[in-house]
Length: 216
Ligand code: SF4
Image (tube, rainbow, N blue to C red; front, side, top):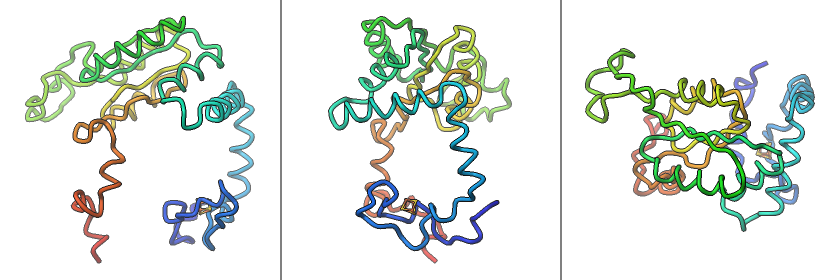
């Protein structure tokens, strides 16, 4: 089923995005022409599971109505309202407690019930997890994304908002959270939580990001 061997290029090398805007054309290697029918059929069938179709329709409506006008936090409010959610969880990094407080205030002002849980809640020492003691230089207690998910699951949240969880910690949160999740803040301590900045400058200031394969 893997098409990695057949294709030297994928959507990541496309640049036209003609699958979204037909007038831009599609490259010869277009991934759309190589998707196994069984994979596409299974994906399309999955939209009939649970709330998936409603999520798609609602997200499209929010995208359309707020296009280039609503900030993401407003999109979250509008999406949650239209989905009929009442209980919203916030999984926050300890470093973003202030911003999570503002988010909770905004959500509550729209009538949502909000439960937030910080990454360090539970206060488990990093060394209990077998994490290298050197890592305690940036904090003695571990982030606990599985506990964050478990607590929000216990609160029966219908929708969860991620606020700056670390790379990998966010992966575990998404894996264990039962409710659908979205991300408001993607943590990047160096760029003011704008990770795309390092991509925009990857041929200038951040050219050191390229690995040895690129230089061959
Ligand atoms: S599906 Fe085709 S047109 Fe769309 S991004 Fe991928 S390669 Fe480009």
